[in-house]
Image 1 (tube, rainbow, N blue to C red):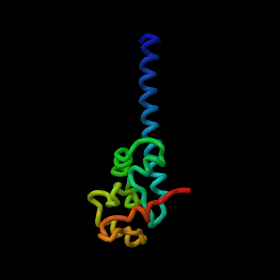
Image 2 (image 1 turned 60 degrees about the vertical axis):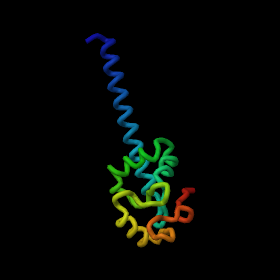
Image 3 (image 1 turned 180 degrees about the vertical axis):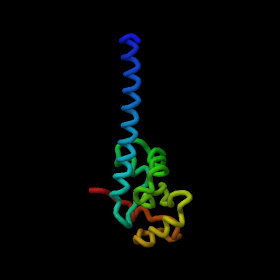
Image 4 (image 1 turned 45 degrees about the vertical axis):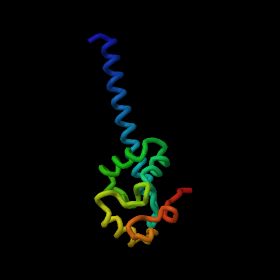
Length: 119
């Protein structure tokens, strides 16, 4: 292999390592934000992305689907205040236990009251 091939291969490998490191950092940052949400308060997937400073709601949702069990996952909601899909009943129990403000329908969180804003 020539030195130019080594440089190309090393460059590609270096880029992959940087990308993997960036993905790991994003996961850690999302989990840190979610871990910081106090009991009785919530954020939307988009709120978490904004606090992390990169990604968007879908990327945060992907992190939560894979790693959310490590943090209080029920404190991250869809934009309309609905609990995470497939976990509605478990999430509602957590909301009631923590005193999270719910809307009149009792099925969604009152985001105006419950949304957390870190200081």
